[in-house]
Image 1: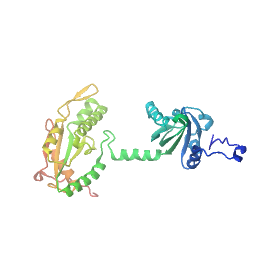
Image 2: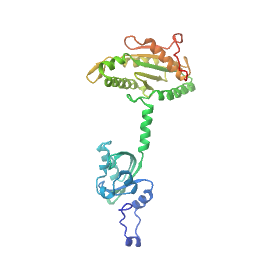
Image 3: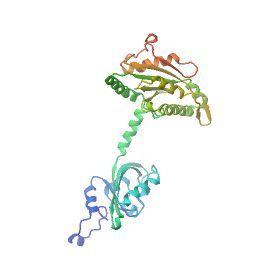
Image 4: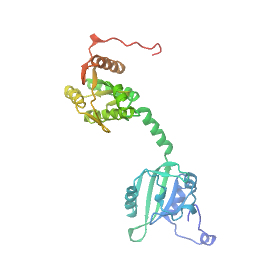
Length: 318
């Protein structure tokens, strides 16, 4: 059985034997990795102590059981078929797999499956090498939540600040302009009150989907709060066309569940470096311009004008 259950008797140890490449590899990796060995039918025939500690299964419990019984349900059965097609021909598969432990917990693993060919160039055994990346996945999850809006999954205000600085730096190097659009959904509270917050959330998701469908905006749409979005346009040669395309996104009814909802937006815009070179000021000026058209019927747009600017009160600690 190798490194978990040894089938090497003393009489075998006394006699010279030809080194098995699989056994050498197992012993080399067993301290650092989670390992299991499969037969030519994909059934478990060996595993190491790290596997036992991670999955809470022992070899007798899994011996000759189908390896895919460990799958979590996060992957389609087709994935195992694809993996099997690769390794049966002597290939190597590498990727991330989510498996379920004996206690029902989910565990993410960076996985490599190495095939050892027998006669006829058909896989005789497979060595599965795991690294537990669950903590990394959890960190990525929280980073995703920290940097993206929970409803639309669009980058949030925190990400906006970072991207604004990068966009301005690029514009400065190129000696070009960029536009910042601040958008607010009109009468969004009425939508929530009329159809319910669940429908309201779906409206916000659809707004986000429509905005990122405009290809140049794909990575530059931010859901900053409630029903407010910010859009950065780095290439402004076709700015008028881009703004028109954004406004036209609201010309079609939003079909949410069984409801057909008319949605409109108010949009304000500021320009770098015409109005400011400071990211926060540019956002504030675009917000100011948006409020100048807020309350009008339909979707409306306004460019920031310094003559109409009224500074917002700031908190003492800001």
